[in-house]
Image (cartoon, rainbow, N blue to C red; front, side, top):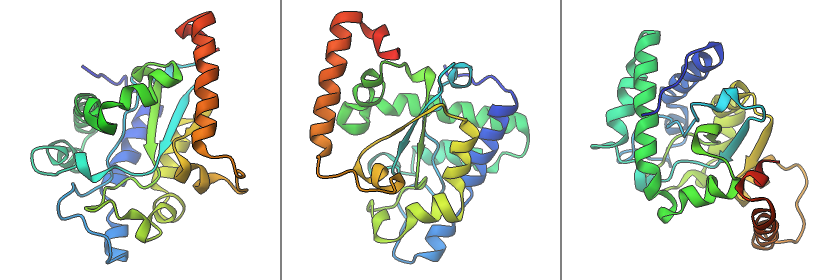
Amino acid sequence: DWIFILDDDSIKLIELHQEAANCRVCFKKYKNLKNNVVVKGAQPRSIGENYFSQENRVCLILINPGSGHTESDGGWGDYLTPFKEAKTSADRKGTWDKIQNFISSEEPSWGKGKWEKLYYQSLGLSKSEIAMVNIMMCAEDNDNYQSEPTLDECFFEQKKSQNIIEALKPNKIVLSGGTAIKFFCKEPFGSQSLYRLRTDRSNRWNKIRSSKGEAGLKE
């Protein structure tokens, strides 16, 4: 089971996630957004239990939780609601650990079963060593988050995801996908397609694996 060691960094991180989980601004401000099916509140993503002890802390930044795996009935709601309502440090810690264990059980079905290969194996890092954060931390019933400026609202206006990323104190940030890259890049990244960039990256990784093994990816 996932067990988070409490220190000042992890306590602050858990508190910021709870604050985000209780935020309802986007759904009150933008009437086009709905969350009648998905769980109400910002959903944490995986934060490795050994993340803060890493010499190089790697944080992956994604876009938003997809609606396909966020149904409140019998799923996320069973774990997120107690976390949102936790009053003491011990209760926050206990409900946080349960959320992380729930994420671990759900991840194998995310990304059409390719989540581990896409985010862990490709980086040559284990789940326990890295952290993940969504720019827009809440799910929307129809994945309709781009119909309104929800990324800007969550990150820049409410600063929910921004504060969490800062609390993680990453040494390296990996932006997942074109939308995340465009959100943070001030200048266009040219005419090269992400497919071409990923192919070049995969070729480099395969060469490293063949010569140095999996450990070589961490160098």
